[in-house]
Length: 58
Image (cartoon, rainbow, N blue to C red; front, side, top):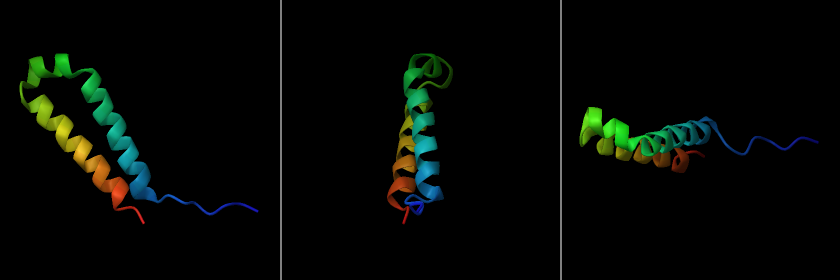
């Protein structure tokens, strides 16, 4: 007997966005040379979007 899928599409999309946010954090030094303070705002926006998607999954 198979278990039903406990997590929806928003959960997995949120995790994917958080992986991208992690990559942005790892390359923050390089990105900040190109984007300046925009790199920090990009990271904050990605992290916020990722958490939003995870918490709104039903």
